[in-house]
Amino acid sequence: MANPSRRPLTVAEYLDLEDASPVRHEYVDGEIHAMSGVTRRHSRIELNVAARLWAAVRGGPCRVHTSSMKLRVGDVVYYPDVMVACGAEAADERLEEAPCLVVEVLSPSTWRTDRREKAIVYKTIAALGAYLVVDQERRLVERHWRDEAGAWRRETLEEQGTIPLPCPASLALTLDEIYEGVELPPLTEVLRVREEAAAYA
Image 1 (cartoon, rainbow, N blue to C red):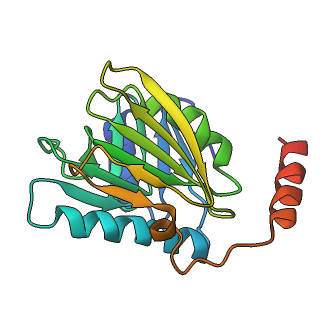
Image 2 (spheres, rainbow, N blue to C red):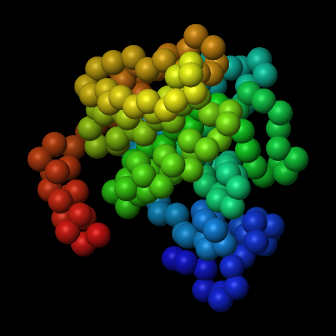
């Protein structure tokens, strides 16, 4: 739901409101949008990824966050499902501003935003080396990464595969690790729901 106020909120006002709100909101150019709940599949995938990353960075300079930490990119504030940051910490302890890795797990209500709007915004982060978009209804991961020349590239891994990560160094994630313990719905049901959602978009 958009912010009911006529005047756009500043980032500072949004952060103060968010501190007092029982419902989480993301902030885009002065407007706030309530976040939807998650499924057990979504939660399991998020924790699988975060646990693997946390085990790799523990004791080192990098930090791993799940969806309770905000990411600010200019006049936008999101709650990524997982992110890793290895550089200097932001002055505001409620925020990260320079992650090297961001992971979003798709939801029926957010998959277009995650694959389009957020991909555009995240790629403006100078420190970001990779953005992963993880499907929660089938074994499929869309990997966006910055190559050695600084250009963004994309590939899709389905069913099996290994995903090299920019941080921590030399770490990779497999689809088996991402989807460990996750029971997926039949593909026909997934396609039916998405077709219905597209019809009302």
